[in-house]
Length: 125
Ligand SMILES: [Cu+2]
Image (cartoon, rainbow, N blue to C red; front, side):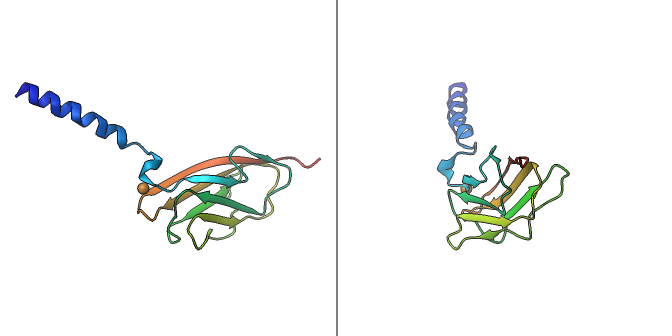
């Protein structure tokens, strides 16, 4: 019986490995952002756009664009393209500084994903 339990334990290990977030599960993760993560843009964007690698549900999509003071500069709720791949939101006039984009979505596979990244609006010269 001891031998048997060792086998069961060994069998459980790979299962732990696949439970970590991997794209093979087809969760929706950003594939491309505009402005991109870490980018320093010369002129303030009027819109924040995230393209996902798998379709998302319109109903549950959230997108915030927080300035250094913590105020959300996003104008209203995000728009989702008909194919569910692109999430975008208009933003007000962004002053120079760092911005944190926070997103949260539910993929059509019903899985939640979320994350954040920053970009910087450079000082005008
Ligand atoms: Cu998933």
